[in-house]
Image (cartoon, rainbow, N blue to C red; front, side, top):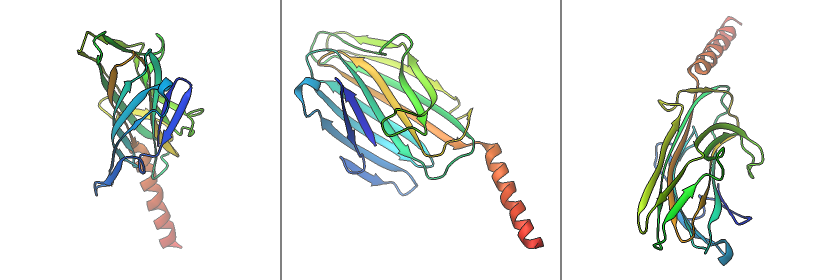
Length: 221
């Protein structure tokens, strides 16, 4: 699922039915597409390219253009259900971005506030992101500006490196990424971000031992 929020409006899209979707035959799935704001006063254009695996990880490239006449605040959400609940896990994530001026008056992309992150990773998040467990924050208080008809990078930033190696707790329903930022009028920002979750080795060992012990008990019975 994908959501975009701007100017008090929220739009939700199912990437499996909006744009193009395909299976790569190795438990990963790809999605791409483009949507445009249905209202002039929230003007935006959003395009995406996603690679996901419900085991799980999300790799996404999201490009948003502010087609309104004023600086706007955006959030972009991508959430993915997982195949199997994990009792404990290792996690990691990253982001890098670019802001591009399209109208000759310079361009700026920035975090909403000095203590706010452009990238946040979540687990077990509600469909409207009202609840969820924060797993990582990146590009806190960051910004980047580009001159007339130029581009400027923002980031990169990572957590849990080498990805994924940060110990984490249980993950039961889904994983998600939220990007939240301000973008100047008539300009474009693109972000490549990822969030990876794997079972913790200890959890696998305990699960394997439990399975083996169960088999032994059945044999002895």
